[in-house]
Length: 256
Image (tube, rainbow, N blue to C red; front, side):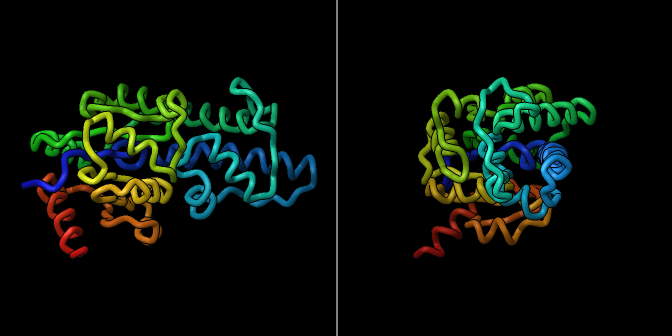
């Protein structure tokens, strides 16, 4: 008897090779803005770092919340602004929109690849009648799935667009995963969350899911484990539906 009915995948860095495009677009945007403040206001320039700033303040979070988080860490306070703002307005929306424009430009220049091991896992889960959903903070989730040709693999998609429509709280709150589980008619207690970001792992833990799997493709295994991941892997090569069932069973037995 299997111990789970559904699996919810994050997108960037888990299913598609788009996490570094996000990181690069955040860094380009913030470094240019911080340099502007240095040249104009005489503020000390300290570049945006992937190891600290990206992982701690923006990774896995809704875009505008990521802008606010990072700016607050540098004691910079900007007005929220309007959703149509560009970077020249110096608003949270303006910087967030500039980041999104850069991200889309990078994808156009470099294309989008998928992690074949993750796609193989998804197909094996579906073969074993496990329901599959994708849950991403990104508003680009739908177009990316369509462009990579894997849209049909998922029975439900809860992304940044849906979250805005439903008023869902972003990661590290569990709203997005709980909603995804609901859409595939699975209880959290019989569902698995797969994430590569600390905020996403924290969200999965808050939702009391059967298992939270961290994907450490960028050497962040320690961070994911400390955030609460039950299992941390570097890739899903060789991992199938039965192995995932074993992980859940071992977790349950460990609680006895």
